[in-house]
Image (cartoon, rainbow over all chains, first blue to last red):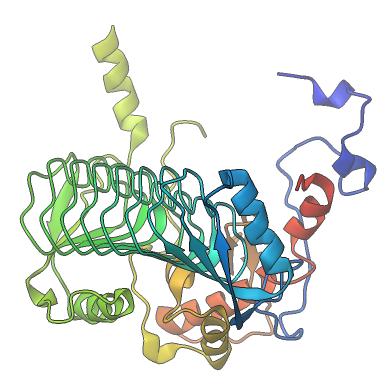
Length: 284
Length: 107
């Protein structure tokens, strides 16, 4: 590891006076007034109007070109953007940190809508692997089916697929809600740390394998439980929340949530201190 | 600390009670075009160094609750206060990411 203490070269952050010390783990203190004027948007983001609408045909554009054009339209105040001819391109709509109403008329390829924070998105087609990976906030609705790793590592927001999804849905998720109208594949909720997954249909083998925390609700049959995934009691509070969430997702109008199964972490994998020596012993 | 399990400082699975939503949060979700609390459903009031606090995932640190704010005696009401305070902190020009953005933003 580089010895940062003896380095004479200042980083840009240091030259701006943001800090002079090396990383020591000290608490950084920032003060702000919670009574300051109401502001609902990140500092420096675009002020867009949902009623200002435009179309963008991306047929002859690469994904970076299309994403830059979306950014350009937001800078002009467009709050509703309809993307025509996405034609399964990969990485479309990534990195949007703004409030926005985005509509895709077609299907997306891999990593569509990744790392977003705020937009409301409707995709009138299918999506490939890792749709909405690392979603921080917002709502993404897919009208048809989705590929594997749907909602990988999301940290917040609502991710909805009205059709069925592939394997490893919600892998490593750290928050947010994933709602599946159809079926889900194997290893759904693999290593999830928090957040909620709702599956109205059936789910494959190893559900919630090695989940650290979080909740999975299943309406159909379960192929098998993964390591440390256990049943829990479905409470009245759970049912009220499920009804509300399905209404938001525009699916399962007449679905009987009282018959859903609730799966949580057994928390036997929580203590890594105890596991580590056993693993070492096994290796020797 | 490597290898130690660090527990959460609140019940991460606690679902929000929407009857407790504050006027500020109502305005916020309307402004964003959402139907509910969205990402704020995962925000709860915890503690840091013995003081009530809310975790800011963007700054990767705890924001302590000012002592001037009187806290109710139930977690659902406290969570709503935490959500409101966190939105105000994250949208403030004094948020640490504003300085980081100036220093490191590439495009």
